[in-house]
Amino acid sequence: MVSLYSADLADVRMNWDFVETGLKTIIGKNASDFIPADIYAAIANKELFLYWLISGTDTIGFGVFSVGDTSYSKSKALYIDHGYVDPKYKMGWRDSVELDAALEDLAKEIGCARLEFNSPRMGWGRRLRKLGWQPLTVTYKRDL
Image (cartoon, rainbow, N blue to C red):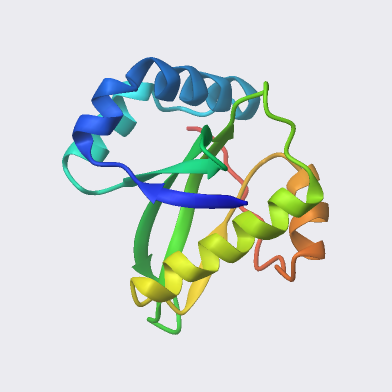
């Protein structure tokens, strides 16, 4: 059973090596323009929130989340900023379904009307559509 467990700053600090490794993996796969310290600072300032991904008694990864108003409807959305699963743990379809349910429960618990997520990794789209997610927009970027 995959579930989410809220991490406070002391948890993040105590497990920083694991979090930093995960964030560096995300940066490498997505060519992101942040550094792990940016995420730590945002968590410390309560701009972002980290939740551990738990399977049974094992911590298998983490998710970094924010909450904001959606652009037009002004309803609250739980935004999945970053997600990491330790490569030692092979996440199967059932795990994905359980994680999706845990995300939905978390969103409802904090008063959000929807979940949002984006990634430059196209494979997410196939998996998320199977879970009932629908693409909303594609974001393009050009540095100046």
